[in-house]
Amino acid sequence: MSTPVSYKQVRELSGVFSATFGFIKRNFGTLYGSIYLFAGPFLLISSTISTVALKSFNALYAFRTYDSFSTSGMAFIFVVMALVMLIGGSVYQVIINKNIIDNENLPPGEKLSIRLIMSDFFKTYWPVLGNLLLFGLASLFILVFLGFLIAGIFTLFFGISTFFGVILIILFMGALFIFIPILCYVPMAATFVCQRDKINIFSAISKVFSYMKQNFWNTWAVSFLALITYTMLAGIVQLPVLIMNLIETFTRVKSNNGYTMAAQSPSDTVVILTVICSLLTFGVACIYHLMCIYQYGSLEEKREGTSVLEKISNIE
Image (cartoon, rainbow, N blue to C red):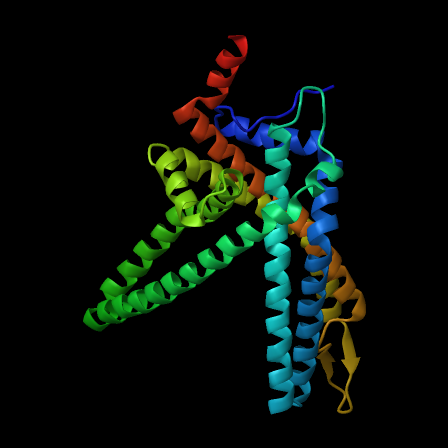
């Protein structure tokens, strides 16, 4: 039997990648079985609603048949979709974290099972959901504030000179390149810490930043390469949808005046294919999530050395 892959180990960049895929290989059935069993129905509903709603919106726009009733109906659909996605996304994160946490607490020789993941799930889920909602509201407030601040700065610089405005845009793009991988990493790692240590999300974020402080560029490199890996794999998964959309785009229908026009909305085949590929994309996203957790575990172990202390304690 293969050795369980622990997150409590100091790893370099390649070690984080190998640990991630090693965990998936060892626990493939339990990991993806629990993801699609718990989060799958919500992700399926939200993907279906969003795809069908987009098709309906394209049809309304094409034939200019939208009115106040159809607009409010579409707004209601998108609100429902957002709520279902919130539930599905939070269940998705809790399930992945629970796979890692339960794997760490397994007795020697045992493997993860869906039955184990199901145990005490809701007891774990509700506190995490509350923290995610709190984090979402705080993030929304910060994004709105930063949006107005950045808009004001850009207006000021372009008002002074177009040259200064262009320089500011270049600096802004450089800042995004540096901080986006970190801003993607922090919520993933913080949600894991929040769930594992049963602390509030802001304490978890503080803990994540404290371990990352001396390892910023190492964490940036892991997150950046993990994002590239996810983007490439997601692109492969979404390739059938792209091909079908291209086929339908270049499929012309004869109009009354002899000209041709492209199909205004995706066919049912594309809708079904989009939903399936969306579900597969969530499976691919699990890879990035796991990489963030293993990177955090590496930083925590480098600082705390908990696994070494546990081994010493067991010897004594």
